[in-house]
Length: 282
View: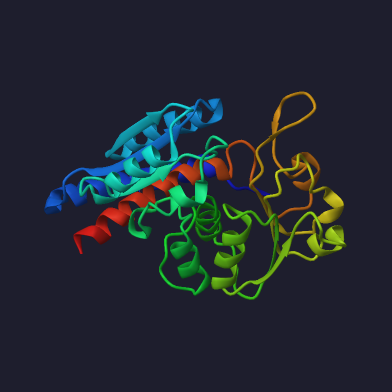
């Protein structure tokens, strides 16, 4: 069994991105800028933002954090995003989710131009991916694809099963695998025969948000298992959607939680930002 080390791979990618950011400046592009907009006091969001800011500093990206209070009005948030969209020094815009309940998430995301949508959440970018064009892919699915590529996992012609259908992970994950010529099955909470479907997968991506949902009897011998889940078990310990200890005995490759897909998500955010900056020079 090969342990897919997302932490080590993400560090390698950040080193590559540091060189690209420096080359961008050397070509006269100036400092690459990422604007991060956070509304409210969600503790998890604050942790994510600190990690993103630290990662930006490491590769030479300037991060601009706009922390707005919980009671921020829709119009005020829209005005800020519109101004960032027009700011030439800002190459990427990230709206940290989830937002306070009174705000219209879709309307706010729509204020971010596709060319600056480094999260890959805009309808235009998702549509470009669906049409197998060069849209910006959502960071977590893109991170999964990069892990598969760097670990030389053959995707073409293989049966890939994605458990989960969220707009952030499951749906774009399925599209990227399909674009890589896999035969893709998407499962969700209403799927019948989940165990049998998963057991037929050459590549199994678990992104349902349910602790240890994927057990050993749901995994084919020699399958590649990617665990996107980030949960807490009954003892409060961090765990994924896969029963790691049991499944690792059957998988040919598997990602751990933590240290698997998580670090790749941040690395792909940085990569998407540098991609956006390089496109702006053209």
